[in-house]
Length: 99
Image (cartoon, rainbow, N blue to C red; front, side, top):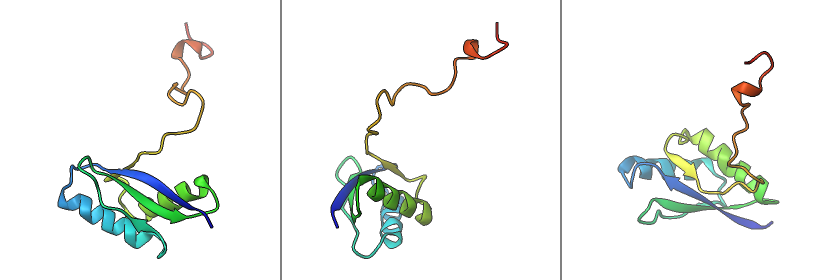
């Protein structure tokens, strides 16, 4: 099975809470996964085995949710979607009945 590295970022600048969040994440991941050390900016990699990148992202996403660290860790993966930066919400002036 292929191995993928998923980039994450600590949100609190290397505090003990960040270390706790990384440890909790590691506990929620499968045994063959690994959580790297954070660099000076708080970025680190999680290495997992999965069928493809989507499965790897889902695996790490689920582990972040299960570990309760979603308020402490951010994903660094850039979405591979055309024009992902555009707002998906409707312009209020485009709604039916608006002036």
